[in-house]
Length: 148
Image (cartoon, rainbow, N blue to C red; front, side):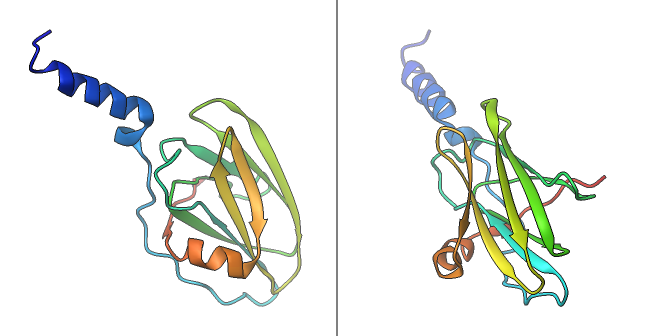
């Protein structure tokens, strides 16, 4: 190998293996809070905008929904408006083949809830109170859902 190129090849490989070259960040419109929909519940899923683990794809699935999947990119959010009742959500790391994480919640009409999705040795799904979620979700952008 050419001695002048060796440092650049090494830096490129190091960046690629750390996920720097393949980071996945949400690119839709910035987060805008929605008023509660009468007779419905609103769940805001979000993933903090940070570079650590941003290259790891986390696929989310709501098995009972018609548009039931979305990839939670770093710095992304998805607002899900649903009928009140029980909601099951699955999170799967498509990048690392990590076992899935199941998350369930019971929703009431008029509620607005916040659920943070993160990755740390596997996908994690954690409900957050509005005051704790607000500064993080304010720095996110909308993601797209899978259409059937």
